[in-house]
Image (cartoon, rainbow, N blue to C red; front, top):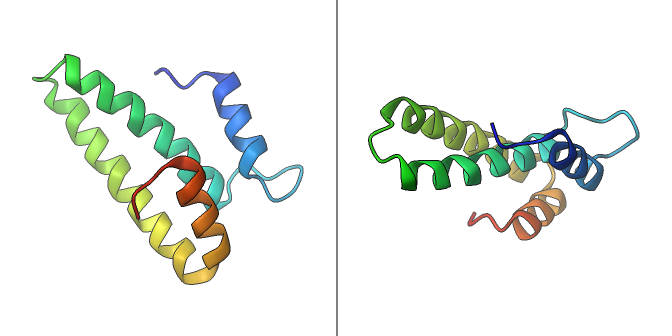
Amino acid sequence: MALTKEIKKELIDKFKHHETDMGSSEVQIAILSERIKYMTEHLKIHKKDHHSRFGLLKMVRKRQKLLKYLHRTNLHSYQKVISEMGIRG
């Protein structure tokens, strides 16, 4: 897994609401987006890695659900996450 502690801490610091926030929708979306980017690059090299492809699809669906929830509950945060993570929403 290429998501190091430093990258994860950086994402948490960027999107957290308060000091102990580690599980808000924004943080979860940011971490999932980084994992999706890594997995996409991995699958470009290893085209027959079907097990990882299935995991990637699960991550994309989970991020999609979180984005839908965030759009419904907090439009301003949704727009911030979309713009800063470079997600097409």
